[in-house]
Amino acid sequence: MRDEADHAAAALSDAVRVRLYDQALNHARIGAWECDLETERLTWTPGVHDIFGYPIGNPLRRATIVDLYVEESRRNMELARAEAIRSGRAVTLDTEIRTWRGERRWMRLSINTEGNNGRPRRIFGAKQDITSDRQAMECLRRQAETDSLTGLANRSVFQARYREVVGDSLNHGFASALVLIDLDRFKDLNDTLGHSAGDACLCEVARRLGQAFHKAGLVARLGGDEFAIILRAPTNPARIAHVLRQTVAMLSRPLFWNGLRLEVGASIGVALVGRPHRRRITELFAEADIALYDAKAAGRNKVHLVGDDGYSRAA
Image (tube, rainbow, N blue to C red; front, side):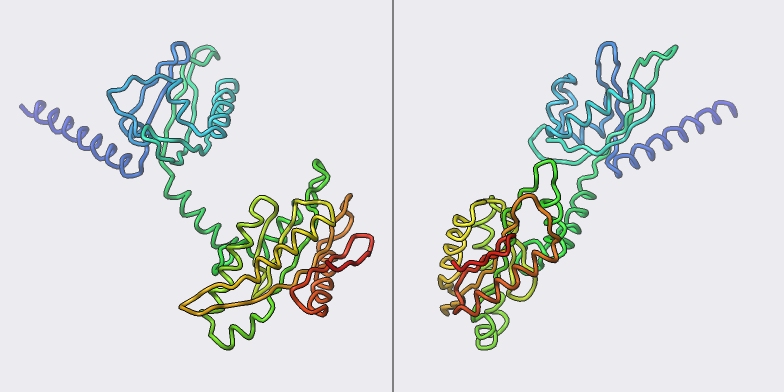
């Protein structure tokens, strides 16, 4: 009787451990998987089904599951899988998937191999839903890289991105101009109607610039009422001047806030980048800043360009 009681207690203890283990895995949103390399037969625990939103009763066909990976993640997953099979070393990577119902999720995938006589027989590992972690990281990244008021890139990101685009030797650099924009009469508006009106004005200017240049360059707020653009296109100086004159007209259109008509203007200074790129970012900012000063001195609502040959022109 004692042996039977001990056996029953041990069985109960094992069941409790299994239940607690399963609960811990479910809480961490982790599931286990394996794939027989000869038949490509997949085996999943319920946790993996939950991550993919894939009904447990549906047949597990590898081709179907691979299609649920977002394209770039699919390529990375197949490369990692091949490397694990070739080398026998464990691989871990983060991948993005679309669930069976179309919801995007991020998943941490681990791949291990097992075989006989040096020949891999199966691969196996774990899959963990890390969507919430990725979303939190993305939120922190956006906070660090964007202007909190307008949502545009901030000064530090703008300068870092500029170094990237002009230093791209493979594509010979693809920035055509560094554009600085300063709002005219903004201080008067801010002092007269208050910071709320000023903030509304800045947000509308940011919206207009973002909409106008979302395919042509990177738009940033450098601080206060100063904005900047890394212009990729157009590249011809005359065309650049024409586009920026249109920008002045666009920014001069009134906006309405709390029943009030708000009006500002814009002065624009431009440093033409030229090719090949030889100058440092500090030099280009200095040139664009001088051009901006000249635009304001010319009567505001003006565009002034400086070329890399030192040639200066009003537009």
